[in-house]
Amino acid sequence: MTIASLHDFHRPLGSTGLTVSPLGLGTVKLGRDQGVKYPNGFQIPGDDEARMLLRQARELGINLIDTAPAYGRSEERLGPLLRDQRQDWVIVSKVGEEFADGLSHHDFSAAHTRMSVERSLQRLETDFIDLVLVHSDGNDMAILEHTEVYTTLAALKAEGKIRGFGFSGKTVEGGLKALEQGDCAMVTYNLNEQNEKAVIDYAAAHDKAILVKKALASGHVCLSPGVDPVRASFELLFAQPGVASAIVGTINPLHLAHNVATVAQVLRGH
Ligand SMILES: NC(=O)c1ccc[n+]([C@@H]2O[C@H](COP(=O)([O-])OP(=O)(O)OC[C@H]3O[C@@H](n4cnc5c(N)ncnc54)[C@H](OP(=O)(O)O)[C@@H]3O)[C@@H](O)[C@H]2O)c1
Image 1 (cartoon, rainbow, N blue to C red):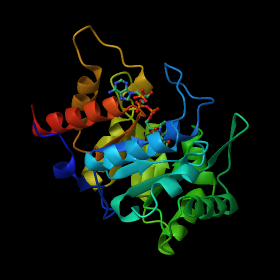
Image 2: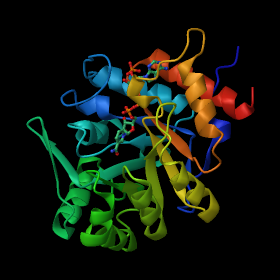
Image 3: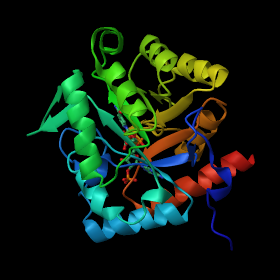
Image 4: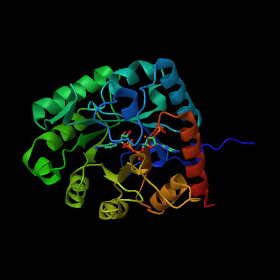
C-alpha cells in the first residue's frame, strides 16, 4: 500500500515565488493552551512528540508551517525543532498581536512591527521569514489605513528580512485592501463560514495568495452521521481555484495522516 503524500501537489503561493503544499501545519497547539476556542481540552506536546509530528508532516509532503508571536511558545519552540531543516520549510509568522499572562493586546506601530519581526527571526533561528501576516484584531480597515504596519512590512521585504507579507483579517473589505498592497490574505473559509469568498475570488483573478485558517471551523464542524466533515471541508475549499493552502492545526498524528490522505484524494478528484 502506498502512503498518500502531498509531494505531487505543491503549488505556487500567489506571485510570491514560494511553492507550498496544499495543507499547512498550524502551530497554536504547540505553544498555547490558554484563551483558545477548541471544542476539547488538550495538553501541549513535549519536544519528542512535537519533533515526531513535524517529521511526519515533512514526510507526508507538508512544507508549510504557520506560527505567530501570539501562539505562546510556538515560535521559540520551532527554532530548535526545525534546526538544520530551514530549507525544507516555508515559514509563516505574524505581527501585531501579543499574548502574555493570558491576555492579548495589539500594536501595529512601525517600531513594534520591526521589533516583532527581528524577535521572530531570532526565535525561529533564521535570517529570513518567508511570509509575515498582520494578526488583525478585527478592525481591518483601520489597521490598513491608519497604522504603519503594512508600510513597515513592505520595507522589511525590501531589506530581504521577509520574502512576502500580507494580512490575516476578518472582513471582506480588509482582505481586498490587504491584497491590493500585499502578497497574501489569510481568510476564514469553512462549512460554517463563507463570508470571505470575495477575497478568494479577487486573489484568483489577480494572482495573489490565499491561505485558509480554521478550515475545519477549529474542530466545530458537525454534519449528518456518515458524512466525513474533513472530506466535506476540503471539497468545499479546493473547489475554489484561489486557495493555495489550508492551514490546519493538529497535534494528533492520526488526524494529520487522515487530513493529508483526504486532501490528496480531493485534489486527485476522487
Ligand atoms: N488570526 C489568525 O491569524 C489565525 C486565527 C486562527 C487560526 N490561525 C491559524 O490557522 C490554524 C488552524 O486554525 P484552528 O486551529 O483555529 O482551526 P482548524 O484547523 O479548523 O481546527 C483545528 C482543530 O481541529 C482538530 N482536527 C484537526 N484535524 C482533525 C481531524 N482529522 N479529525 C478531527 N479533528 C481534527 C484539531 O484537534 P487535534 O489536535 O486533536 O487534531 C484542532 O483542535 C492555526 O493553528 C493557526 O496556525 C490563524
